[in-house]
Image (cartoon, rainbow, N blue to C red; front, side, top):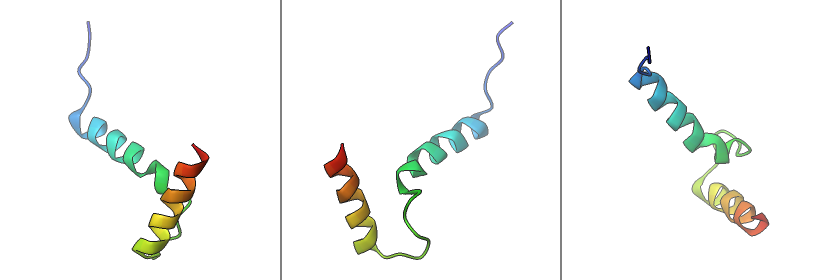
Length: 45
């Protein structure tokens, strides 16, 4: 028998995955710091 996944667990897993690329950004930083971090990571890819 196949069991369905809990939708709230799926939503939390998706939200966590969406935040992973910001793990190295300090709490409280501004948009410029976030932009710089994302830009640096894009250059490395």
